[in-house]
Amino acid sequence: MVGFQIGAASVTRVFEMIDHAEPAPEFFLGDFDEEVFARHRSWLQPRYLEPSTDSVLLHMQSWLVRTERHLILIDSCCGNHKPRPGPGWEHFHMLDTGYMDRFKETGVNPEDIDFVLCTHLHVDHVGWNTRLDNGRWVPTFPNAKYVMARAEHDFWAGVAKDVEAPIVPRNIYNDSVLPVVEAGMAELIDGSGSVGDAITIHPAPGHTPGHFHADLLSQGKRAMFIGDILHSPVQIPLWRWSSRFCVDAEKAKESRREVLALCAERGDLLIPGHFGEPHAAYIKAKGDEFEIDFDVGNGR
Ligand SMILES: [Zn+2]
Image (cartoon, rainbow, N blue to C red; front, side, top):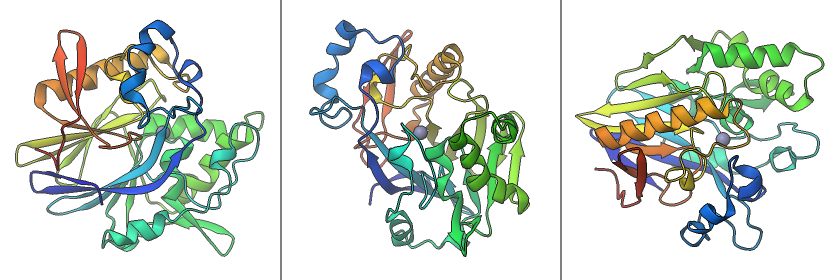
């Protein structure tokens, strides 16, 4: 099981699936330029870019953090049995993966989780917030507080109320967010805030309106969980390139620059939502340019 030790805190990866159905880089990344991208293609293949299809490879995974006092799950992947009908959504529609078995292999029970952090409320970050129980969506982690940014929650709640909006974003809110809100288990955060004894969250809008990053600090060691502030490691050297799934590409770019600079300055282990092996990276800065250090071991 992949994991990192950050001071007294341990971080364990809970794997859901590899998404082989994402678009090729020229469709995935705005500002795409083949000549620039070509310089990176060889190191991206086959781990982060599928050679046969040229698809951007994304790992669907959660991060389980054990601090001295709390158990925290960061981003809850896609979930099982969730209706995501229509073209473009096939790879998320009515999934049946072994995620929960792998979750339990960590030795943690769903009842033990104190906090579920949703960096943002996209389909692949909230799915296991709930599970199907006799035809009803119920919170998977019955004793947890589900932490999300108020700006993020309110944006998607608005989409869900809009009968003209596409069905899938409405389904995502209604089956994976609303049940925890109605159960009184959602904790909506304005701006920055702290979660338990070792994590703070900080707004990083752009990919979505209320996206945040979660910073772990334990015994002077740091890791930063950044959700989808970047999707592919190529967006570290090419940090100016936002994905086409970002609602505000300019803000996303600024948030990306800020987190990369912070990781480089403080020595945080950068833990994104979707990286393939080794699933995390250290960052080196040279002025406004950033390099990847994949020599992450079990953390430093
Ligand atoms: Zn994602």
